[in-house]
Image 1 (cartoon, protein in one colour):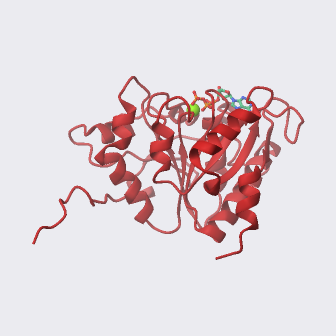
Image 2 (cartoon, rainbow, N blue to C red):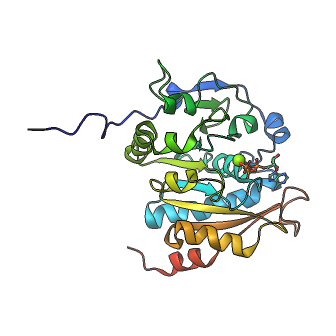
Length: 266
Ligand SMILES: Nc1ncnc2c1ncn2[C@@H]1O[C@H](COP(=O)(O)OP(=O)(O)OP(=O)(O)O)[C@@H](O)[C@H]1O
Ligand SMILES: [Mg+2]
């Protein structure tokens, strides 16, 4: 009788708060770093709360727990949105929210949260000796759990398609139902990384920058990833002003979302 090789279906425990490294954090640090989603009193958290509400609705209707954050072009604010939406989600005690940095080359979540990971996701994915699970960080006083990476020139496509990445994504999938994962990804047209990771995620958000991202670019990204899994399009750096100047975020939901909404509850 030939059993599957142990490695193909292996699962690792996803560390919870007890296995996480606690780092100093307070409201002032959060504001200085542009992370507003933790503070419901800050008007700048409002748009993230709206996005949170949509994601929780989709969680209820469709069971979506693993959400990628992508864009067509670089530098539109994916990591800013990932950090803030996950901060907002983490305030809901019914769930345990993780934000995962799978932008292996330009990962910047560690900058948003002021982390200097000794061993990040990259070490786990590369099979660095002694690193058998991704390091998880926890901000003092908050519930959010962070899996950062260290940016660098690496063969990210091979790493993301590799055994360890597949094990991690499978482990996230089979982990506790109340775990939600916001996954920061590179732009879809930069390389294959976002598409590869999306193979194991439930849905995605497209971040667009007002005045910069073209409708056509959003459409091309949606065509590539498929509109059935489109959770929404977020217009970032929106000057129309739902929140204060400079940090505006407007979420508008594209055709794909409308379609998803129109489908009857299963
Ligand atoms: N709404 C906003 N208001 C002000 N600054 C913002 C806003 N969104 C993003 N930024 C800033 O713009 C810069 C780029 O944002 P971010 O790193 O989130 O983009 P990205 O899409 O993740 O980039 P990359 O493609 O390199 O991963 C950061 O310095 C971020 O703090
Ligand atoms: Mg980024």
